[in-house]
Image 1 (cartoon, rainbow, N blue to C red):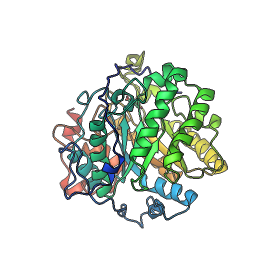
Image 2 (image 1 turned 90 degrees about the vertical axis):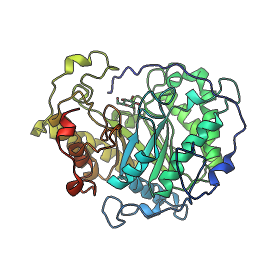
Image 3 (image 1 turned 45 degrees about the horizontal axis):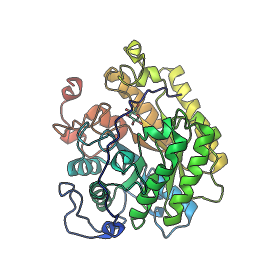
Image 4 (image 1 turned 30 degrees about the horizontal axis):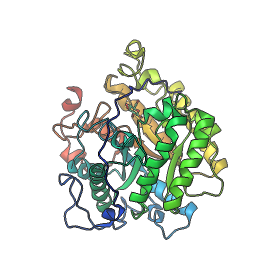
Length: 397
Ligand code: BGC
């Protein structure tokens, strides 16, 4: 189980204004985030990376033209190789981590990722009083990212992230949580099928198994009212671990769901030196080299998930995995490669945690890829090889 003590951040209040969901359908020539997201591009459902590639084959079914079960499977193929845009929009205000820019999206596309997961702290951008209005300027900002990514043929996960109050006081916060989903769902109801919603990142603490089950069902109803056909992503409590899947009960009739889990095991390897995890200093120096025993443990874990998925007939999205940058490079590379390969061997789509922050595969200042790490994720990336930068950049961090 992932025992993380995520810092509780101050919630900021956003200005009130009427929501304008039609804005999302607007079309303008040049998509750009610099323009605060007001621009858009035709939301054509472009082809994903080589449609014949085994990992993305079937992604064309991520379209409203396909029946729900096929659409969910197709959308999971569209998520085959996803990159988390972590620490950007999930901080209480922007600027505490890397600042989301056009380049991040363009670079992700160019490297060969098929999708981006936008981890968003919506609760910090909404009013505290009913109707809990989400700041329209913030919607514009997210729209910019969604539109630019969609125009480039990237699928997008819109994730409700770091909603601390839902974990500490789920009963009293639930109404606001549902109101936020009501607005987000309305706002993106005309987005292409390749834009997916993820209900809540890592429910934990008082949002335990039973409570999450109730809240999740209510959220599914809320979203389905305006988005009957959209593919939704949901994971178990606590922490979206694989063990949590056993207690996750999904509405049988809703076949348009992707199930997610996060994988950070062993936690002593992946979170060594992580400031937000108590006692993690003591884990410094824990190596992972892919010994037979280490690989066997990983394989067994993923086999459990695959078995669950087979019984439940649900596509699986490994929504987060990665090793903190305090670990030694050999450990980071070996673990990341092994986990990515296991995910693919089991037919799971995956999303590396994360692009340009403390687990980052991209240097946010120079915009250079950390090539060895990128190589573990996308061995055939077109930006590797001839354009490769020096290994030293990675070591020198
Ligand atoms: C959290 C991050 C954290 C990561 C790994 C994510 O879900 O949002 O803050 O760095 O998990 O622990």
